[in-house]
View 1 (cartoon, one colour):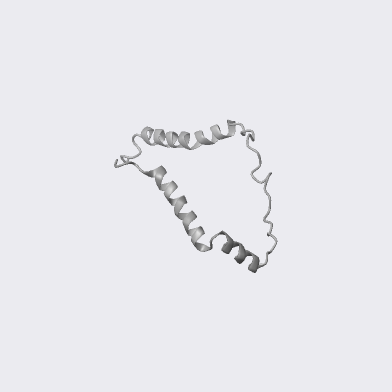
View 2 (view 1 turned 60 degrees about the vertical axis):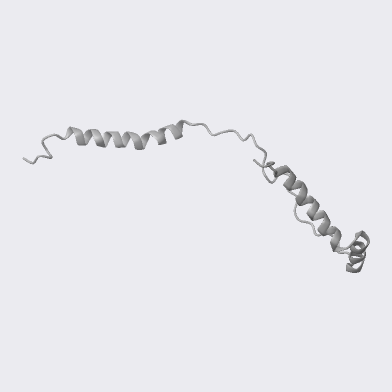
Length: 93
């Protein structure tokens, strides 16, 4: 007689333990009720893309010139950066 067939209980116990571990999540999932939808549908208020009406490029260039040209945009962007950096300063810490 072989040494493996003398005591089949440890092998049987291990097999049953593995089976219990595999079947337990399925049993719990079957018992769990489906959650109710508390959130609204994500596309309920979606608005599709709408092209803006085209404008005359000459008028757009004139408008940029009236407000100070590209330097005005540069100045505005630097002010925005300064404000953002002011919020992130740690004053030497």
